[in-house]
Length: 407
Ligand SMILES: CC(=O)SCCNC(=O)CCNC(=O)[C@H](O)C(C)(C)COP(=O)(O)OP(=O)(O)OC[C@H]1O[C@@H](n2cnc3c(N)ncnc32)[C@H](O)[C@@H]1OP(=O)(O)O
Image 1 (spheres, rainbow, N blue to C red):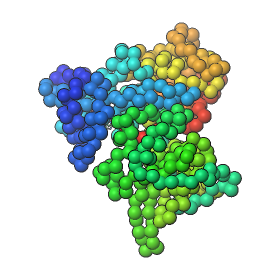
Image 2: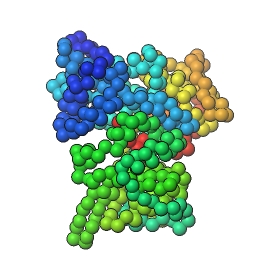
Image 3: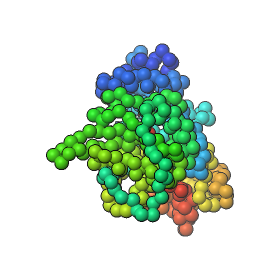
Image 4: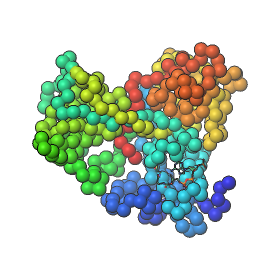
């Protein structure tokens, strides 16, 4: 039962300070005053909800409005859920649930984005609202000088370090063509870029300022961390993003990072799980990898979401979908995919071939976890003999989904 003393409604520009203060209090965050301005830049009151106990604002959540690249290289609007927080002292009263209810009902009823995504502060929070792990990411560490295979082609045009203004301009120009080809990458407006290249001390622990290494067909964004030991320099390079429009430019940028003097280790905390550099190495064991969940995805409107992406193989099947939190999605759907990879989705009374939860569809939606893997875990039931593998194949994608930034 919802607490009757609590109300929820969307916010106004005047609420920003209160909104930010609740968010900051919920993360016990008091160092990052500059962050207030960054959040203000992207704050959209129409997309922000507040939960009130009387007049007191005690819980907040907001949604950003980027585009995401879906399988088939489709750019599509995304409800990017962010700054979710509940004032300490008001926890476990159902405030998060009220916020999730308001967001998902609102998106569905207004017919806006059929897909939502977020980064979860804790992994046990969002499954109950029908979110599934839509992408994974990898902490990838490579030692200085790690050699490439002899066959690797490197674009020999030089990589140059430039100052921030030029680096940012270059990235902003190149980024859309890269992001449009990478499943899970988001569009960035000025506010998003501002956050991406924020350089304040609190944001970077004890690492140095962001550095911009440009190649004519790509860029690397990274921070050095100076470190010395009894053998000499042992700097760490912390990569924030590497992008190339050709494999040869991408290889050139990684070669540059791996060969920088003073450096002992190059680490990217949010690399793709199939980051191509791992396939360039002469000794693949040199790549140290640690996986974690990345984007959590919610199919707000299953029918529209399933139609939005493209698929890898034709299919004609019937799904029995459960969705406890958004009952409008529950029921039986025929999913018909043509040779062009385009899906038709319609309600049906025909017998179901696969039974699955909306969070399972979310896990497969960007091509991260296969339906077959979920079935092996017992999360999907094959009701029609032989129906699992064709469906699983249709959902697979050209590469693993990846989102290089947090929000
Ligand atoms: C997208 C993002 O921004 S992620 C950031 C989320 N924010 C934070 O982590 C900031 C610090 N934490 C908080 O502000 C709060 O503890 C929140 C937002 C995580 C939870 O808010 P609450 O209002 O206490 O949650 P609420 O009472 O609605 O609980 C909802 C459910 O989640 C469960 N839950 C709450 N906190 C947690 C947790 N930390 N881990 C696992 N389950 C949790 C509750 O038991 C409840 O489960 P039920 O529905 O099965 O009974």
